[in-house]
Image 1 (cartoon, rainbow, N blue to C red):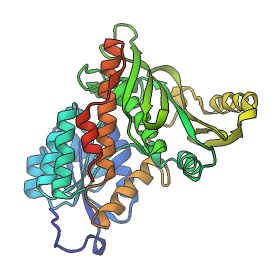
Image 2 (tube, rainbow, N blue to C red; image 1 turned 135 degrees about the vertical axis):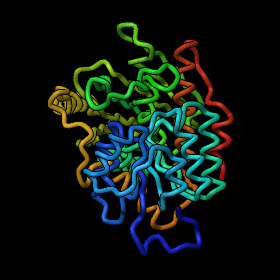
Image 3 (cartoon, one colour; image 1 turned 90 degrees about the vertical axis):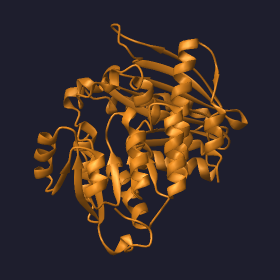
Image 4 (cartoon, helix red, strand yellow; image 1 turned 180 degrees about the vertical axis):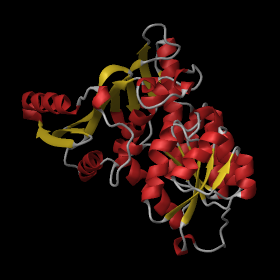
Length: 366
Protein backbone atom coordinates (compact mmCIF):
# COMPACT_ATOMS: atom_id res chain seq x y z
CA UNK A 1 0.00 0.00 0.00
CA UNK A 2 1.11 3.58 -0.54
CA UNK A 3 1.54 6.24 2.14
CA UNK A 4 2.56 9.85 1.76
CA UNK A 5 6.25 10.29 2.28
CA UNK A 6 7.01 7.15 0.24
CA UNK A 7 8.39 7.10 -3.30
CA UNK A 8 6.75 9.83 -5.34
CA UNK A 9 4.07 8.25 -7.49
CA UNK A 10 5.06 9.96 -10.80
CA UNK A 11 8.42 8.13 -10.57
CA UNK A 12 6.75 4.77 -11.20
CA UNK A 13 3.53 3.21 -12.44
CA UNK A 14 0.40 3.48 -10.31
CA UNK A 15 -0.50 0.09 -8.87
CA UNK A 16 -4.25 -0.46 -9.21
CA UNK A 17 -6.52 -3.23 -7.96
CA UNK A 18 -9.95 -3.77 -9.50
CA UNK A 19 -12.51 -5.04 -6.99
CA UNK A 20 -15.42 -6.86 -8.62
CA UNK A 21 -15.23 -8.17 -12.18
CA UNK A 22 -18.84 -8.02 -13.30
CA UNK A 23 -19.92 -6.11 -16.41
CA UNK A 24 -18.48 -2.69 -15.59
CA UNK A 25 -15.27 -4.02 -14.04
CA UNK A 26 -14.42 -6.41 -16.85
CA UNK A 27 -15.63 -4.35 -19.81
CA UNK A 28 -14.58 -0.86 -18.70
CA UNK A 29 -12.10 -0.65 -15.84
CA UNK A 30 -9.70 -3.42 -16.79
CA UNK A 31 -9.36 -2.39 -20.48
CA UNK A 32 -9.10 1.31 -19.58
CA UNK A 33 -6.33 0.71 -17.07
CA UNK A 34 -4.62 -1.61 -19.55
CA UNK A 35 -4.64 1.24 -22.08
CA UNK A 36 -2.93 3.62 -19.64
CA UNK A 37 0.87 3.43 -19.76
CA UNK A 38 1.10 4.90 -16.25
CA UNK A 39 -0.83 2.00 -14.67
CA UNK A 40 0.22 -1.40 -13.43
CA UNK A 41 -2.79 -3.67 -12.99
CA UNK A 42 -1.56 -5.16 -9.75
CA UNK A 43 -4.48 -7.26 -8.48
CA UNK A 44 -8.03 -8.50 -8.95
CA UNK A 45 -10.52 -9.13 -6.16
CA UNK A 46 -13.66 -11.21 -6.61
CA UNK A 47 -15.51 -13.78 -4.51
CA UNK A 48 -15.51 -16.09 -7.53
CA UNK A 49 -11.82 -17.02 -7.52
CA UNK A 50 -12.09 -19.29 -10.56
CA UNK A 51 -13.54 -16.50 -12.66
CA UNK A 52 -11.06 -14.00 -11.23
CA UNK A 53 -8.08 -16.18 -12.17
CA UNK A 54 -9.45 -16.61 -15.69
CA UNK A 55 -9.81 -12.83 -16.12
CA UNK A 56 -6.43 -12.21 -14.48
CA UNK A 57 -4.75 -14.47 -17.03
CA UNK A 58 -6.42 -12.55 -19.86
CA UNK A 59 -5.11 -9.22 -18.56
CA UNK A 60 -1.77 -10.59 -17.29
CA UNK A 61 -2.48 -9.73 -13.65
CA UNK A 62 -0.34 -11.63 -11.18
CA UNK A 63 -2.30 -11.31 -7.92
CA UNK A 64 -5.86 -12.54 -7.30
CA UNK A 65 -7.66 -12.26 -3.97
CA UNK A 66 -11.03 -13.53 -2.78
CA UNK A 67 -11.55 -10.66 -0.32
CA UNK A 68 -10.52 -7.07 0.21
CA UNK A 69 -9.11 -8.04 3.61
CA UNK A 70 -6.58 -10.29 1.85
CA UNK A 71 -5.89 -7.58 -0.73
CA UNK A 72 -5.00 -4.89 1.79
CA UNK A 73 -3.02 -7.34 3.91
CA UNK A 74 -0.92 -8.77 1.09
CA UNK A 75 -1.17 -6.46 -1.91
CA UNK A 76 1.04 -3.46 -2.66
CA UNK A 77 -1.36 -0.98 -4.26
CA UNK A 78 -1.91 2.77 -4.62
CA UNK A 79 -5.53 2.85 -5.81
CA UNK A 80 -8.61 0.69 -6.21
CA UNK A 81 -11.61 0.63 -8.51
CA UNK A 82 -14.73 -0.50 -6.66
CA UNK A 83 -16.99 -2.26 -9.16
CA UNK A 84 -19.23 -4.14 -6.73
CA UNK A 85 -22.95 -3.60 -5.91
CA UNK A 86 -23.68 -0.28 -4.12
CA UNK A 87 -24.39 -1.80 -0.71
CA UNK A 88 -20.74 -2.89 -0.45
CA UNK A 89 -19.15 0.40 -1.58
CA UNK A 90 -18.87 2.04 1.84
CA UNK A 91 -17.25 -0.91 3.60
CA UNK A 92 -14.65 -1.36 0.87
CA UNK A 93 -13.89 2.36 0.55
CA UNK A 94 -13.47 2.81 4.30
CA UNK A 95 -11.05 -0.11 4.32
CA UNK A 96 -9.10 1.43 1.45
CA UNK A 97 -8.84 4.85 3.09
CA UNK A 98 -7.69 3.23 6.35
CA UNK A 99 -4.83 1.73 4.32
CA UNK A 100 -3.90 5.00 2.60
CA UNK A 101 -5.32 3.96 -0.80
CA UNK A 102 -7.10 6.19 -3.33
CA UNK A 103 -10.61 5.16 -4.40
CA UNK A 104 -12.49 5.22 -7.67
CA UNK A 105 -16.02 3.97 -7.03
CA UNK A 106 -18.78 3.17 -9.49
CA UNK A 107 -22.09 4.98 -8.97
CA UNK A 108 -24.12 5.33 -6.92
CA UNK A 109 -21.75 6.33 -4.13
CA UNK A 110 -23.45 4.10 -1.53
CA UNK A 111 -26.79 2.52 -0.66
CA UNK A 112 -27.82 5.31 1.71
CA UNK A 113 -26.83 8.83 2.74
CA UNK A 114 -25.33 7.79 6.06
CA UNK A 115 -22.93 5.34 4.39
CA UNK A 116 -22.05 7.91 1.73
CA UNK A 117 -21.33 10.54 4.38
CA UNK A 118 -18.91 8.16 6.11
CA UNK A 119 -17.07 7.64 2.81
CA UNK A 120 -16.73 11.39 2.25
CA UNK A 121 -15.56 11.95 5.82
CA UNK A 122 -12.96 9.17 5.52
CA UNK A 123 -11.70 10.61 2.23
CA UNK A 124 -11.26 14.00 3.89
CA UNK A 125 -9.58 12.62 7.02
CA UNK A 126 -7.16 10.43 5.05
CA UNK A 127 -6.69 13.08 2.33
CA UNK A 128 -7.18 10.41 -0.32
CA UNK A 129 -9.15 10.74 -3.55
CA UNK A 130 -12.77 9.60 -3.63
CA UNK A 131 -14.02 9.78 -7.21
CA UNK A 132 -17.27 8.29 -8.49
CA UNK A 133 -17.93 7.03 -12.02
CA UNK A 134 -19.80 9.82 -13.79
CA UNK A 135 -18.36 9.32 -17.28
CA UNK A 136 -20.74 11.70 -19.08
CA UNK A 137 -18.87 14.77 -17.82
CA UNK A 138 -15.85 13.49 -19.82
CA UNK A 139 -17.81 13.60 -23.10
CA UNK A 140 -16.35 16.39 -25.31
CA UNK A 141 -19.74 17.71 -26.49
CA UNK A 142 -20.96 18.09 -22.90
CA UNK A 143 -17.66 19.69 -21.91
CA UNK A 144 -18.14 22.16 -24.77
CA UNK A 145 -21.67 22.86 -23.55
CA UNK A 146 -20.30 23.66 -20.11
CA UNK A 147 -17.75 26.03 -21.63
CA UNK A 148 -20.53 27.84 -23.50
CA UNK A 149 -22.42 28.29 -20.23
CA UNK A 150 -19.32 29.41 -18.31
CA UNK A 151 -18.39 31.98 -20.98
CA UNK A 152 -21.87 33.47 -20.83
CA UNK A 153 -22.65 32.60 -24.48
CA UNK A 154 -26.21 31.64 -23.54
CA UNK A 155 -26.88 34.54 -21.16
CA UNK A 156 -28.50 33.57 -17.88
CA UNK A 157 -29.16 29.82 -17.95
CA UNK A 158 -32.41 29.20 -16.13
CA UNK A 159 -33.30 25.64 -17.14
CA UNK A 160 -31.45 22.51 -18.25
CA UNK A 161 -33.28 19.45 -19.56
CA UNK A 162 -31.51 16.09 -19.62
CA UNK A 163 -32.89 12.84 -20.97
CA UNK A 164 -31.27 9.42 -20.75
CA UNK A 165 -33.40 6.69 -22.31
CA UNK A 166 -32.22 3.11 -22.84
CA UNK A 167 -33.14 -0.58 -22.41
CA UNK A 168 -32.95 -2.31 -19.04
CA UNK A 169 -29.27 -3.13 -18.31
CA UNK A 170 -30.18 -6.77 -17.67
CA UNK A 171 -31.21 -7.06 -21.33
CA UNK A 172 -27.76 -6.15 -22.52
CA UNK A 173 -24.49 -5.78 -20.74
CA UNK A 174 -24.87 -7.18 -17.22
CA UNK A 175 -26.22 -10.16 -15.30
CA UNK A 176 -26.05 -8.47 -11.88
CA UNK A 177 -29.42 -8.60 -10.15
CA UNK A 178 -28.70 -5.64 -7.85
CA UNK A 179 -30.31 -3.41 -10.49
CA UNK A 180 -33.70 -4.89 -9.49
CA UNK A 181 -33.14 -4.68 -5.72
CA UNK A 182 -35.66 -2.29 -4.10
CA UNK A 183 -33.02 -0.97 -1.68
CA UNK A 184 -30.14 -0.24 -4.09
CA UNK A 185 -31.46 -0.65 -7.64
CA UNK A 186 -33.90 1.11 -9.97
CA UNK A 187 -33.52 3.57 -12.80
CA UNK A 188 -33.07 6.52 -10.41
CA UNK A 189 -29.93 5.02 -8.84
CA UNK A 190 -28.69 3.88 -12.26
CA UNK A 191 -29.43 6.55 -14.86
CA UNK A 192 -30.70 9.17 -12.41
CA UNK A 193 -27.23 9.36 -10.88
CA UNK A 194 -25.83 10.38 -14.27
CA UNK A 195 -28.52 13.00 -14.87
CA UNK A 196 -28.19 14.58 -11.41
CA UNK A 197 -24.42 14.69 -11.88
CA UNK A 198 -24.79 16.36 -15.29
CA UNK A 199 -27.07 19.05 -13.84
CA UNK A 200 -24.57 19.71 -11.03
CA UNK A 201 -21.73 19.77 -13.54
CA UNK A 202 -23.37 22.27 -15.88
CA UNK A 203 -24.74 24.52 -13.12
CA UNK A 204 -21.60 24.19 -10.94
CA UNK A 205 -23.95 24.03 -7.98
CA UNK A 206 -25.98 21.68 -5.80
CA UNK A 207 -29.79 21.31 -5.75
CA UNK A 208 -32.10 22.33 -2.94
CA UNK A 209 -35.27 20.31 -3.64
CA UNK A 210 -36.89 17.88 -6.06
CA UNK A 211 -40.31 16.73 -7.27
CA UNK A 212 -40.64 13.42 -9.10
CA UNK A 213 -42.97 10.76 -10.45
CA UNK A 214 -41.97 7.20 -11.33
CA UNK A 215 -43.56 4.14 -12.92
CA UNK A 216 -42.85 0.44 -13.28
CA UNK A 217 -43.66 -2.13 -15.94
CA UNK A 218 -44.89 -5.72 -15.52
CA UNK A 219 -44.77 -5.54 -11.71
CA UNK A 220 -41.07 -4.70 -11.54
CA UNK A 221 -39.82 -4.34 -7.93
CA UNK A 222 -38.12 -1.01 -8.82
CA UNK A 223 -38.98 2.10 -10.81
CA UNK A 224 -38.13 1.83 -14.52
CA UNK A 225 -39.19 5.29 -15.70
CA UNK A 226 -38.96 8.60 -13.89
CA UNK A 227 -39.45 12.30 -14.57
CA UNK A 228 -38.34 14.97 -12.14
CA UNK A 229 -37.96 18.69 -11.54
CA UNK A 230 -34.84 19.70 -9.62
CA UNK A 231 -34.64 23.13 -7.95
CA UNK A 232 -31.32 25.00 -7.81
CA UNK A 233 -30.44 28.30 -6.11
CA UNK A 234 -31.27 31.58 -7.89
CA UNK A 235 -34.44 30.27 -9.49
CA UNK A 236 -32.75 27.76 -11.79
CA UNK A 237 -34.29 24.41 -12.67
CA UNK A 238 -33.30 21.01 -14.00
CA UNK A 239 -35.70 18.64 -15.77
CA UNK A 240 -34.87 14.96 -16.11
CA UNK A 241 -36.36 12.06 -18.01
CA UNK A 242 -34.88 8.59 -17.53
CA UNK A 243 -36.07 5.18 -18.66
CA UNK A 244 -35.19 1.52 -18.90
CA UNK A 245 -38.26 0.81 -21.02
CA UNK A 246 -36.99 1.73 -24.48
CA UNK A 247 -35.75 -0.55 -27.23
CA UNK A 248 -33.43 2.25 -28.36
CA UNK A 249 -30.86 4.53 -26.74
CA UNK A 250 -31.53 8.27 -26.74
CA UNK A 251 -29.46 10.74 -24.76
CA UNK A 252 -29.09 14.51 -24.82
CA UNK A 253 -29.28 17.84 -23.00
CA UNK A 254 -31.23 21.01 -23.85
CA UNK A 255 -29.92 24.18 -22.18
CA UNK A 256 -32.20 27.24 -22.03
CA UNK A 257 -30.61 30.69 -21.71
CA UNK A 258 -31.87 34.25 -22.01
CA UNK A 259 -29.56 34.91 -25.01
CA UNK A 260 -29.31 31.52 -26.70
CA UNK A 261 -30.33 27.91 -26.32
CA UNK A 262 -28.16 24.84 -26.82
CA UNK A 263 -28.72 21.19 -27.60
CA UNK A 264 -26.02 18.58 -27.12
CA UNK A 265 -25.88 14.80 -27.39
CA UNK A 266 -22.83 12.55 -26.95
CA UNK A 267 -21.61 13.39 -30.48
CA UNK A 268 -23.48 16.57 -31.38
CA UNK A 269 -23.80 20.20 -30.24
CA UNK A 270 -25.66 23.16 -31.73
CA UNK A 271 -26.40 26.66 -30.40
CA UNK A 272 -29.40 28.72 -31.51
CA UNK A 273 -30.87 32.08 -30.62
CA UNK A 274 -34.28 32.52 -29.08
CA UNK A 275 -35.97 33.03 -32.47
CA UNK A 276 -34.86 29.70 -33.91
CA UNK A 277 -36.93 27.35 -31.76
CA UNK A 278 -38.80 25.73 -34.74
CA UNK A 279 -35.52 25.06 -36.55
CA UNK A 280 -33.99 23.78 -33.32
CA UNK A 281 -36.75 21.25 -32.88
CA UNK A 282 -35.92 19.87 -36.33
CA UNK A 283 -32.21 19.62 -35.47
CA UNK A 284 -33.06 17.87 -32.25
CA UNK A 285 -35.38 15.37 -33.91
CA UNK A 286 -32.79 14.66 -36.60
CA UNK A 287 -29.95 14.15 -34.13
CA UNK A 288 -32.02 11.86 -31.94
CA UNK A 289 -32.94 9.78 -34.97
CA UNK A 290 -29.27 9.38 -35.78
CA UNK A 291 -28.37 8.52 -32.20
CA UNK A 292 -31.19 6.08 -31.53
CA UNK A 293 -29.92 2.61 -32.38
CA UNK A 294 -31.54 -0.78 -32.02
CA UNK A 295 -29.97 -2.30 -28.94
CA UNK A 296 -28.67 -5.53 -30.54
CA UNK A 297 -26.55 -3.40 -32.88
CA UNK A 298 -25.21 -1.17 -30.12
CA UNK A 299 -21.58 -1.71 -29.17
CA UNK A 300 -22.07 -1.03 -25.49
CA UNK A 301 -19.39 -0.74 -22.82
CA UNK A 302 -16.47 -1.36 -25.13
CA UNK A 303 -13.69 0.96 -24.02
CA UNK A 304 -11.56 2.62 -26.68
CA UNK A 305 -8.80 5.17 -26.31
CA UNK A 306 -10.25 8.66 -26.04
CA UNK A 307 -13.83 7.67 -25.16
CA UNK A 308 -15.48 9.08 -21.99
CA UNK A 309 -14.81 5.99 -19.86
CA UNK A 310 -11.14 6.02 -20.82
CA UNK A 311 -10.84 9.78 -20.27
CA UNK A 312 -12.49 9.44 -16.87
CA UNK A 313 -10.12 6.76 -15.57
CA UNK A 314 -7.13 8.52 -17.12
CA UNK A 315 -8.14 11.63 -15.17
CA UNK A 316 -8.34 9.61 -11.95
CA UNK A 317 -4.87 8.15 -12.51
CA UNK A 318 -3.42 11.58 -13.28
CA UNK A 319 -4.83 12.88 -10.01
CA UNK A 320 -3.26 9.94 -8.16
CA UNK A 321 0.08 10.56 -9.89
CA UNK A 322 -0.03 14.17 -8.67
CA UNK A 323 -0.63 12.89 -5.14
CA UNK A 324 -4.11 14.36 -5.09
CA UNK A 325 -6.36 14.07 -2.07
CA UNK A 326 -9.85 14.92 -0.88
CA UNK A 327 -11.72 17.13 -3.33
CA UNK A 328 -14.94 18.26 -4.95
CA UNK A 329 -15.50 14.88 -6.63
CA UNK A 330 -16.45 13.36 -3.28
CA UNK A 331 -18.79 16.20 -2.36
CA UNK A 332 -20.57 16.03 -5.71
CA UNK A 333 -21.04 12.26 -5.38
CA UNK A 334 -22.70 12.78 -2.00
CA UNK A 335 -25.00 15.45 -3.46
CA UNK A 336 -25.99 13.09 -6.28
CA UNK A 337 -26.73 10.30 -3.80
CA UNK A 338 -28.84 12.63 -1.65
CA UNK A 339 -30.77 13.79 -4.73
CA UNK A 340 -31.42 10.19 -5.81
CA UNK A 341 -32.84 9.31 -2.40
CA UNK A 342 -34.92 12.50 -2.30
CA UNK A 343 -36.29 11.72 -5.78
CA UNK A 344 -37.35 8.24 -4.67
CA UNK A 345 -39.04 9.76 -1.63
CA UNK A 346 -40.75 12.44 -3.72
CA UNK A 347 -42.10 9.87 -6.17
CA UNK A 348 -43.44 7.67 -3.36
CA UNK A 349 -45.04 10.49 -1.40
CA UNK A 350 -46.06 12.46 -4.51
CA UNK A 351 -44.76 15.73 -3.12
CA UNK A 352 -41.81 18.13 -3.23
CA UNK A 353 -38.86 16.98 -1.10
CA UNK A 354 -36.04 19.20 0.13
CA UNK A 355 -32.50 17.85 -0.17
CA UNK A 356 -31.38 16.84 3.36
CA UNK A 357 -29.40 19.45 5.28
CA UNK A 358 -26.89 16.71 6.10
CA UNK A 359 -25.84 16.58 2.45
CA UNK A 360 -25.84 20.35 2.09
CA UNK A 361 -23.54 20.64 5.12
CA UNK A 362 -21.04 18.22 3.59
CA UNK A 363 -20.99 19.74 0.12
CA UNK A 364 -20.36 23.17 1.59
CA UNK A 365 -17.23 21.95 3.40
CA UNK A 366 -14.05 23.76 2.50
